[in-house]
Length: 429
Image (tube, rainbow, N blue to C red):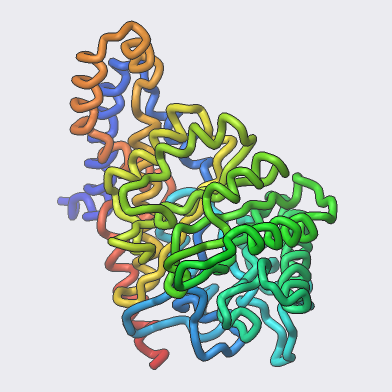
């Protein structure tokens, strides 16, 4: 007699059987799950490198500044560029689909040479480009306006000192050229996102002048005409930060107006607003006047604490807005969180897979039928169906997607991460 089916084969058969049943369930609403999974596979999420090393970078900075704080000391933090890329590669192998990696200027590799940020060049990121080519993925970029002696007083692009302000303007220009290089070399448009920590701890007398300076500085940063085929520029607001509790120069109102006037992307970060505000409600408003936007999907807990993304109501609402508005081609989805209290590779996997799960649930909605109910003022049916859909077998479709993409189904990815922790992370000391 034969030995019977292996455990892996049994899991595969169960996943496929459950998927067939789920497919039939959704087909009753006219939803083709095969097409949904094909669409999901083509949605690239930009995964931030700074989760892997607690936003340390490779400049040798001893302190993280700019209102950013990372807590925890879980073993295995990446200490070198190679270790960081190794960890990212492990995470990517456990996440279905093909994605992008988002890096900050402080992740330059200068071979021991002291290179000021305003002098950074594409060659300082060549290893990142070569790595991305091997994996067939794109790279996004961010100038780094924090953790630097010239940002210690809390101001950069809006600084009252023209020499300091010019330093940061030149850094912004250099960053755009680096992002352009990414786009040219990889054949995938690079999003270059500008966030600055500028602001006051206490109530200022003059709110206007710093914003005038920021406006002029941004105009200079973006003055060089670069092809949108290679690089797209974004500006990111914030409500407050540690050290800028009372006033932030780059507020949402400022950047929304700037983005509309100057045709750059507005970045909406889930943690950069009042605790009762949500970015899901801002997406359609911004896209009424902007061609494209950038999202930083995160999870604030009482403040901009950048917790790992979970499958909560707001994450789901964000993805529903994107899908329901047919904004998939106009919204760039990036992640932004850093947790040093748990396995950092696991944090990437948990957060990214949850963002994808929310996208999948949104894609499985019978959107047109729901819109018809709404137009016909059948609000009873709209509410009833939306609630029933919550318990539809989307999990079976997700499991099949993982199987289809060659990544572990359900929590089996955790076994891989635990083994990687034992074999690699714990040996870093």
